Length: 386
Ligand code: FAS
Image 1 (cartoon, rainbow, N blue to C red):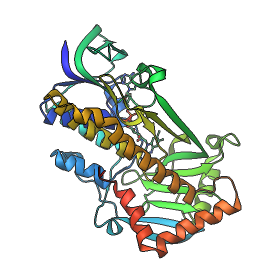
Image 2 (image 1 turned 90 degrees about the vertical axis):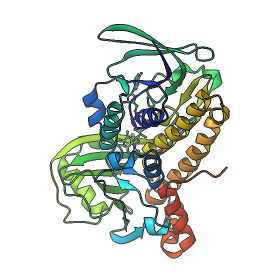
Image 3 (image 1 turned 135 degrees about the vertical axis):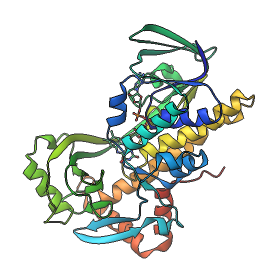
Image 4 (image 1 turned 60 degrees about the vertical axis):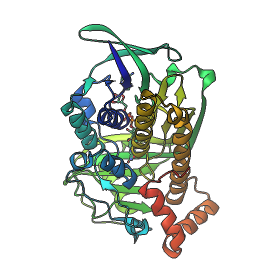
């Protein structure tokens, strides 16, 4: 069997790429290791930034993938319980994002791809990439047995733990890892969502509350990795921490349905390409959820890669040769923004000097129009000017 492109992974990167290639008339096959219900249920991100929304607008997909998704408005930051509202879209010249749970976006992208006749194969096991610098082949097995697909290009959209990045010889890659020294205990609870996306900042540490559908909220509570495991906290302790840090003694509790810990780490692999293999999304980079850029970076990579692959398959590979540099420029821009944001709202190591720096950073958002606009520009997602 042969295809123009084999896309490994059906997450935001893989499904955005597959839909955009499909609209360009490029034949691609998507290989996904898990089953459909896993792919459609996995809860993660919650915000599509304005730039990501423009990608779907340009592709004629926005009406379907964003149907009913509320447009984001204010961001509420409570500093030692005192509320501060940032009208991010207004500060970004009207560029607003959407509050859309990642699993809903993935479910809809899956639907549009299949409705367009897309070839998506679930439970594709033992995916392996071969001859990436000559005539690429991808092998895998499923219930029907072993398969081999010859292709012109491979898109590695299989996340941080996928097979694509490890298929690149180690001496071809430079990797950067950064441990922020912060952990987030994240819980999903049947608790009414906040009026606006909410962050609590103060001496007790960071907390946040975001909507995850009409009757559910996702909460985040900062903890010190290695010093404790908050998953062992009784629920009363979790609610007590949230009420103090969010400055809301009356915060209604609710059944906690999911508990995870996320240690804040950042990672970048350079370059995002090897031979005929191109990495997109978490396969190439991991960013903290501060500023909500992980999923949005994955979608932005897929947009650049779709255009570049389409041009290459029509005879002009200039954009494909530039792919890694273009995406790494945005990746490092967002890594810097996410670190800046992380430092502003977290008590990183109890250092009083750093805590005062963070407070100065915070105050500038509400006293300096240019600083607030720069913050909102990054929240909206940036168009890369060459
Ligand atoms: P994904 O990991 O989403 O998808 C990869 C796909 O490839 C998966 O379906 C996987 O099953 C499949 N796969 C893996 N190995 C394979 C193999 N060998 N063969 C075939 N298929 C394979 N981002 C934000 O923007 N905002 C947030 O608030 C946010 N919160 C997060 C909270 C948590 C707890 C976590 C873990 C992440 C969060 N993220 C957030 C980041 C997250 O959304 C990722 O950036 C996003 O899922 C990246 O999308 P993909 O690159 O498509 O990778």
